[in-house]
Image (cartoon, rainbow, N blue to C red; front, side, top):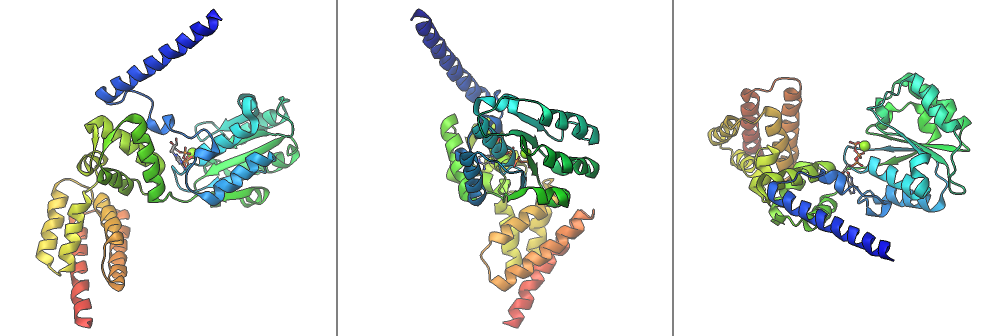
Length: 352
Ligand SMILES: Nc1ncnc2c1ncn2[C@@H]1O[C@H](COP(=O)(O)OP(=O)(O)OP(=O)(O)O)[C@@H](O)[C@H]1O
Ligand SMILES: [Mg+2]
């Protein structure tokens, strides 16, 4: 009894300690675990977005018979998170012994496939009935072709005891024979609404002061990447404590969309000298060409203007982006682009 009381007191103390760390963190600006890790969902139910994929994963977790899986999609959309949540849900307390995770930081050459992976597949581990050992190969697109080749037969020979889950950004980097042995689940970038809900949740948990515009700014900079969104949120909070549009753009070091909007406004008026002036001002604040062109694209995409004109604009911006990505990141490129955008309106005006 007394031990129970002591234990309860211990828990209380821990909670108190945790809450003090939280306050310290809030005042000092966050010396605690990155929020991306703190708020990494531990169960599949907490992973947001990509409903179709998650429905399938939840069905697998329920059924217990996991096929070999390939999860592919852009960074920060929950691949690593889901595959670990799935393994945790399938294996429960046997998770530690029943899962082998190898990611791009481990050497995964052909020797590792021959020794470590095969060794783990051959090992005897006690698991819940009907479950399999799981080998997670994270960032599998970084594995060499030879190592992937060596996996082919291994996947088949040990299929009654071991299943594989591969996570990667591009499925084409996985050799076809492995693709044909696995069910492919695709992840796409998360919708703004989904990121917003998660950000709100984290803000409430961390008692962050924020404005709705501030969260929108984070979403704008994150481009559907939840990791990026959470990191930017934490960076803003530790830098300024309050999450507002201005603070977010200061931290994320991207041109403020308002300034970029003003460039487009001027282009739409066909006012080349003014547009050129605005571009030069933005350039003089020190942003690189690719920062400016990236924001210009995002702003133009959501700008209200006639459809045909918008397509023309996006095409011009796309071409300029291509040249900049090729290495011609000069002010002249941006000025040329601004002049062409102004011209588009004149031409459209003539056509009307
Ligand atoms: N769908 C999601 N729901 C909730 N949180 C998410 C989601 N996706 C990502 N996150 C957050 O972002 C962090 C990184 O996610 P994760 O490691 O799963 O990304 P990933 O898809 O594996 O990316 P990469 O391709 O870069 O490895 C997680 O710790 C979590 O906090
Ligand atoms: Mg990952």
